[in-house]
Length: 510
Image 1 (tube, rainbow, N blue to C red):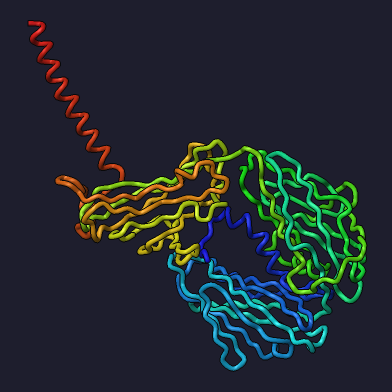
Image 2: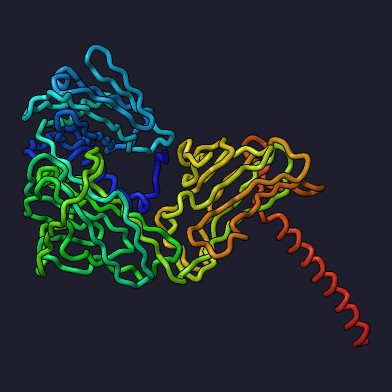
């Protein structure tokens, strides 16, 4: 899993992540107590209150940030004895190591590879409630965090409530051209045993989609989800649809060939109340629209359906059609060197147009394979070890054989280049050796230029010249050697030609 995401790329998806993590269980119908936090100035600990139904599960997470960068391991402790009267807790999370001595959870997150890191990996947890867990039972989970002598606590309240199962379509596929209007609709079914009054529909749209209506029971602001409240009483076993579609406009700069992933999600009023109380969850201002009311209209009863968990949201995929395409090309580099040299090279991606490329949609933007006999000793921090489609290390980590290089949310315009520098040490070089830089742009119009080479050639006499590095090796800049030789030849030719011309003119004047 990628540990250090590009900032804007991550911002485009954080809405989906925050909302999705809060409703990984059947929707619940009961009140909740807000979390409290006693956090010293050096630590920020975030975790949302949870609801769970008997016989079901709920998912939560603990996010930890240090206000002053640290590179030391972080420790988290949680007393489990009170939780045992409700159910069992399991944990997961990239980099976390957890043990359970005597009804006690003890976890450690490793230090980052960069000294200025201030965000630790998120600790995910799941609570599986017993089928006989008493309703209205409340358990306080005290997450105690210690870092370099600094201590902080976050209290998350778990409440056992009656379960309600809201169901909707798992997937919806739509398409639109740049500049087109797009109608989005949805259905919701109450698969629970009794009626449920009050539901909330949210949609986290891609930034290329703009909401184009003003329903009085919906709220929206660019950069936040669309939130629509319904007071309808949903009868059990009945499916309801929106009385009108939600209209969105596809941005005119959208690139054909992209597939935008969005999420539609249904909530009970109590589940949504927990999100409203969470200051870290992005939400639109509490300003309703002034247009017509968006309603839920009952449909004829459908056949029996699965009441499994995690079925209250829809993955809405929108394919962008049309002819607003782009051609991305990979950029390699070349150098002559000797064993022991350290060679600086520049590789990257260039947009040949005619349409802009949103670089954060391509992850990685370029994939780099290091030539045999070469070792990466320094590389741009946007490049992470990457192998078999998986991120395997931190940004800027030396020594890997392949890297995936991301981009920090830039719009790469036609003719622009996104470049990455790296320094390679020559360990072995008896003949020409090559690596590769590849890109795979969605909707790319010319795959023939999606691969470029990183070329190393053994230095000839006089080649590989440069200033000695600290260890006596010679830093060489890729792609500079050949132009310098050509330039020197041109200058020599100009000098000789000028001399001969001067002699001819002297003779002519005489």
